[in-house]
Length: 477
Image (cartoon, rainbow, N blue to C red; front, side, top):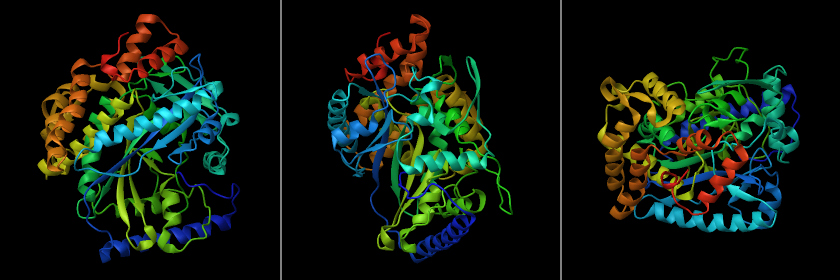
């Protein structure tokens, strides 16, 4: 939900008019799809990478606006909390050497970000949940200044009838607490991968992303700690799901569905069904009326931005002249290094295209409920998860990745005309990580058991390793 808004207080008339515009724009999207307005183009990819700002003690530092202003880079944006920010890339074509191109861009922008942060006595770091963040840090006093964040907090609490957010996560240890606002969400930072798709294969690539989610969340797990509790390998998943949980819909709608979650099933059309589901099953959260023509789909996009499926459909309307569809894969944690981030991207893009190419009966061979169970098992246990794959074969996630999914990802990238040395390098990093079992989460957990529960010291150790650029499976304890 990256759009800024002008209002933070809304009347029933706002909701009524917004819902009317949303219905109109949803119908317009259907019309565009029926008319063939969306062109078939070569695959294009891009990413959003969320980061933390920390001081020399490894504690969160709320200075994102100052750092962004000093960096003066339009690819940097604020996030919900003032100790987070987001680094974006422009789209690149998948054929050729896309991952080396992304790596080069990220390294240049990261270097500028580090320099700007140094001027504000802090530094950026990549992790799914900062181990040293304390619940006291997660207050509205640390909220970024944009109105959309204030309105989000107010409307989520309104839908909850002002009840506090209840957090209850059971992993290696158990944590339960009540929090008065949505700022728990800001503790979760992610890598969001974007894939432009054509209407003809959009639903199949979306379903491939759903099926791949267990492998990607397990491979990229980097969030084992929250408030000094060892929880899931990717604690960011239950944290985010619970941080914006709202009461079920009422009043004639067909709900309830979780506002953050794995979704309600596989896609059955060119992603249009998700926008229908958005309108029918989810209450409008931010009824900001836009001074824009229907062709901008402004209300449809704003509403979609307040529904956080782990695989989310996106539409870029371009005024209806050259619209395109995208899939946003949201399951991976940020970090631990830029090399890990780009390797994660290569694995995801290769795997979904490999599944598209080699598994035409994917949805029948892997029921959605099985893909969902796999996802949460991998989020909880990482590479040690037991998953059920095509044909109801059960086994360790690590073996599945090494024996089947990495070869499938290689085939997918080859079919997209990615250079051979590019494939070998980036998928090679994934193979080394999975073989060793040393994900970001596994490294943090091992450090914690060896050195004891000292979160600031853990963050300082992470920073030292991150500055070498070496991927996480090569880090010493």
